[in-house]
Image 1 (tube, rainbow, N blue to C red):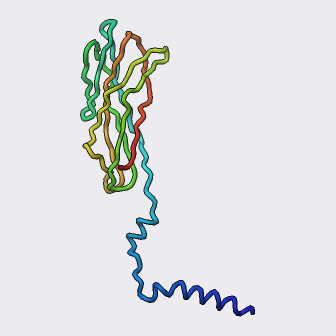
Image 2 (image 1 turned 90 degrees about the horizontal axis):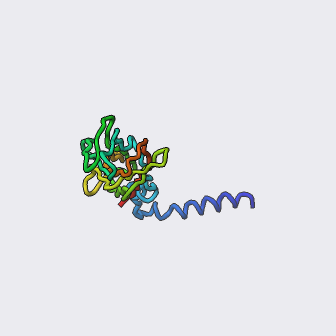
Image 3 (image 1 turned 45 degrees about the vertical axis):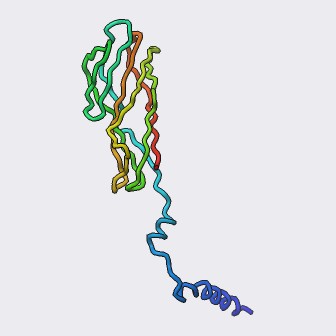
Amino acid sequence: MTSAGPILVAAIALLSAAPAAAGDPVPEASAIDTIERPERPLTIDIESGIQFGRMALRGSGSGRAQIDPLTGRTRIEDNMINLGGATYQGRARVTGEPLRPVRIELPTTVLLRSSDGGEAQLSDFVTDLPPVAMLDANGVLEFAFGARLTSGGARAGDFRGRIRITVDYY
């Protein structure tokens, strides 16, 4: 009775291997890889945020400035004055599954606040991305973004806020 156990296990192993040995087609390695390999999750790293430098309002109304995502240059609009300082566009890096198209969404508006309670707003976000953004062969996509700053009420301060960027596969 003790020797029947190993013989039964060997017979079951041979029966389960028999269809493959009989010439049934074996899936190609690429089909197995596609089934077994999970999709690489997307990650986004902000390499630099948007920086408008030093701005001032000419009067009591609101003023606006805009950063171009391609050049990083600031365009002053309406009632705003550029007082200098470092100005640059935001930069982000997305990683994920190579050669996959991705959808990148920026918010409609972002509220900025200063430590003394002053508020400003970012809106009209733009990127340097093509209409269909795609990760490269290494699974990387880098892009720049800009926005319009609107300030009213002549409050001074160091305004800060978070820009929520959403990335998803198509």
